[in-house]
Length: 264
Image 1 (cartoon, rainbow, N blue to C red):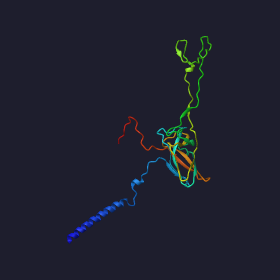
Image 2: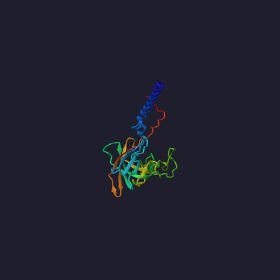
Image 3: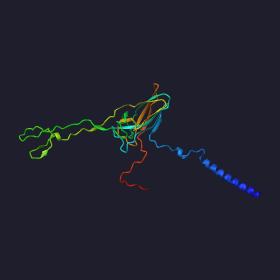
Image 4: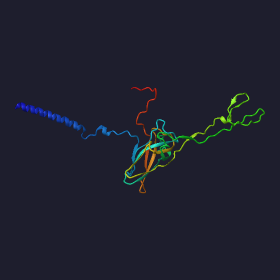
């Protein structure tokens, strides 16, 4: 009888110990948020809401163009998701806000347009095109008697008095005037969003949201101020102004050939 009671008490202690361990393990997670639950996907861009909550702006950023960025006078695509959080259609007019003071990291552009993806390719500025050219008027060589000889316009070489051959005016190089970036065709950035719907723009979209005529070179670490005017049922919401940064790459830049690795 004594031995049976001893075994039973030992079994009871083991059972109580196992229950305590299980309770301790459960207590570590009960009422606490796991660390992985706090992690968010790496999404470049900023988020904002209109004051009345009708419009949600998500992932707003100028597409990354590499270290060199976008040149002054060029164009740059903007990535954004516009969410209509109401049960009625609304219209969003996107414009440019004034730069904040003399901050050199904030620039502007001439306008914001909806452009064709073919005309404003992702990660590229406008294609330069010549605006005109000038051709110098060739000076006619003088004849031995001092009279001006007729210029040769046939494009063939003409030997001079010493017997050497010099190119004629027709074969001379024609200098061109400096080139300027072409302005992509587009329309004002006015978007109608159906009820409870999302409209998304990316550099890969068939229709892009583009900054046209950048006031200065736009690189990583810089931003452009955009405004969002919401109109619904003829009523305008308070203007939403958002400082829009240049997106950052989600992967490290590849090393240059021959670049030495640093060791700590």
